[in-house]
Image (cartoon, rainbow, N blue to C red):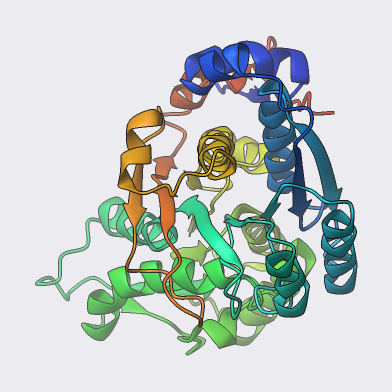
Length: 380
């Protein structure tokens, strides 16, 4: 029987769900921090995951007793700069920023540094500024590795067996998002030995990030780009075996293009990332094959513990990991934003397929729909 999920993002349920990780006890016993304000800048509400991130962050900081300013900037760089400037002018005590464009905030964050406001780069590394105190994200290269390894395992690829070959096309993310290159490189590097051996072929010849990038992670752009690829390289009956998409919003567009424009009668592997509701439904329906899941409630929880330590005058390091319930690593080598290495707390992503959807339910953030026929989001 096909199963369906509904994501639970309401404040009342989230408070209950928080008992599943260690941050809950801290929130219940935290001192009154209402005289301290956390400024949170998210890129947009147009992507499901940023709604989740913003609400999780706001909920957890408010539960811990802080006042919160939460801004969504509609994927408008100028607006995000203005939003952050306004929060600086309001005298927030700490900024948490998921940047629209990693290189567009230099002057604004110089103002934050002058005002002695610490800044946490959230999920996306902010470039070319020394105002960043820490970076909290997932192991972004590993996201791509998981996608590439899934292809290897699903097809049983063997570098010594060149008798069988498969066709693959890549769809990457937003060039303005520093993470997008990590996702693409993780996948491409994992599959490159098979590409060089001729086991994986790319009929379009699009092998670089720049050739397959998708501005703003747009579903419509991914749809149009992949329709063009199918029309140019697959209309003669050439078989497409794998559509490796860096995230779920692009996977939606690619899957739609395959359904409407692909001439083959096979079902290609389609990868994704984020665990968006529509994509989980596509996994149930056999339209998308997998997604890489990143528990953003854990990401918000790590950010809370880090922010509290900073505001208490501490200099967080590897020892902070002992206070976290989520699996994470402390990295002081990988993320150079152009002004130096940014100390980073990196959480661990994992692969979701139709065979382990129940694991999402066990996080407490999803539940099976009663009629088990379709996905319903209860997010506000």
